[in-house]
Image (cartoon, rainbow, N blue to C red; front, top):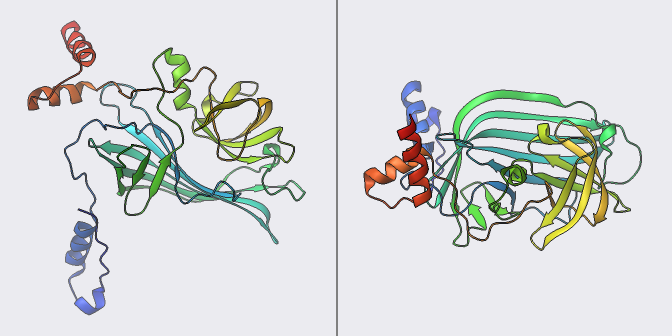
Length: 305
């Protein structure tokens, strides 16, 4: 059942303020429409709005979802919208809206539950007429205009049959890369260190990117360039400011809309994430099948305790 938007006029209806607020809150509540469960498609990683045009520079909407790291550790998300404008009065300015929160899932749904909202901008003092690439060294510190905690459900997204898209009432995203494959956890943590290329210098030798885990970005470290056609290049991070990074192209090529990952990252052919202890116990109680690896891991841990 899709959410229905209802416009109320308190003046016309003349309801008591408390009752009107209760009715409004109830009509706007969003929740999972299916039982809570692990998703049948990977939700971790980076998604972009289907409305984004990679040929149009200076704007985008990105959804980053991080993997659960331990039992009962929920998915977390960052929804980042940016607009880069060269204004007559203030000069080069990157406006942004950053929403963060946690993710609840059913087998076919993804519920974004927002816990914090930020909006602001970064000025860039670089001179020149290159709209697609602003040097990181010329960015000023981030200026926050709004920053407050919230507690609302942002949108209920539903997987397309292929798992390559998620769509809700307000947002529609497409996956930018497949889930990580099995292997060395240090290598596969590349999915926790995703960056997105928002600009490339005219000569093609440097790229500007947004990182979704800036603490793992280190000057001098290398990244591989990924898009849906595979790995196409290598970059070396040169300079950083906040969640922005500038990197030199040291092999292959890069373009706006590409994803940067740690070297050694490999896509996964068949997706299956580890179930948490709580999910295993719920499946056992409902008589649902539990993968053998998850059963041994959880029951073995309980026996040890």
